Image 1 (tube, rainbow, N blue to C red):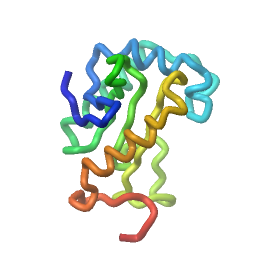
Image 2: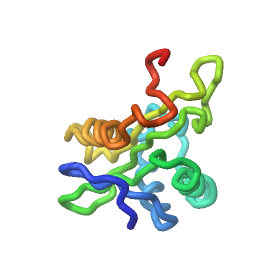
Image 3: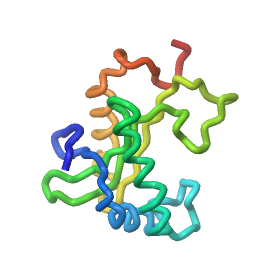
Length: 145
């Protein structure tokens, strides 16, 4: 397990091929995916194994400091979801007419059991602080410079 960063209550680590079951379980909850492009569709384990996880794994080689990380609750060592901090151009829905190619996208998906505990804020804040965005060639969305 390659740890990317830790917070008081979370461990954000690199995904591995063994995480297919975690992603399948996460995306099997209709409430978790309600506001995503997968809403109303059951997850496909094969797609997770052959498309989603390989794409996650390429981020670690392609970008230093950017990627998608498995979120583990420290106290239980349980997988509770994921966080990403990536160049917006990597998003399948990226539209250059609506976004700058240097924009950074931050997102997360957490199990319902982890909702309302402040994990989203804690993980997102840690990514921004830890990555010291001022040193990166890309910029946070929301401004012209």
